[in-house]
Image (tube, rainbow over all chains, first blue to last red):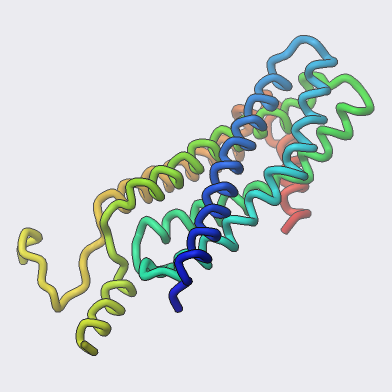
Length: 172
Length: 61
């Protein structure tokens, strides 16, 4: 099924907005995580974790699920297909993996936020604070790779894509 | 069989960039898991403190 041009552009606009917005939101989260970890000022530290919780809950989480919907619609609605090219497959895997890691970290983020609201955080809470920096840093890199893949579209057809193309050519 | 002459009747091999990306990904996952299990980079509190994060992670699954 091929999407009509107007609908394809609408879905493409939404997909780019969600994906790039997700990257920006995770970058903001990383800055807050670093500020929360390094700041000597307890007010800044605690404000950072409250901000991280709000950002993760209301911006990053919705923006991580949205490309999982728009991406497959876009690829299945165009000749690119979802599983025909490696760059699309790798992007899909990066998106799924980043979303799973985010969901796993949602509860520790909320816990840190609750701790920060109740009392000043200390070095004893580092077991939760350091992984936030590591995970969001890794997420920024992964989302940058996904963005670069979408722009460069490196060559490489999967076995499935090759078989489909072979069958289509044979049918002509 | 030479790679310089692709056979149109056989599927293409996996591109080098996919293999490289996969290798980097596997190395990063292994480093991440080892560091987590050893407790390094987690405030120097070792396994005990890290079980807290694991518990939270497992609760979500």
